[in-house]
Length: 126
Image (cartoon, rainbow, N blue to C red):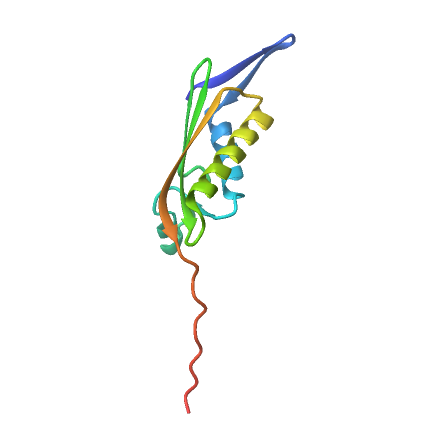
């Protein structure tokens, strides 16, 4: 994978795509209304498999820009465009802040909607 080189007076600093993916994934999960990363995010957990933290994040880095694609599922009832916009801001700010990168584009793909699980009703036998 491509790495970002930052030249300093003391030498170079390398930031790999994997680091950008992890920063993006961690920050995306913190956005209220996001229920999971990747399309069909709930099925892996349903089948007893732990989803990879990086699932649903794709990063492309060039010399002058970074593009981050984030695939998410959102909670039913939220305003999707507001959650997606907040997600763009949070991921972009996190990558800028932690990795020091500039010229970042964050594309959000809402691939699913998940409803809250209804509490199970208890039935009493008489």
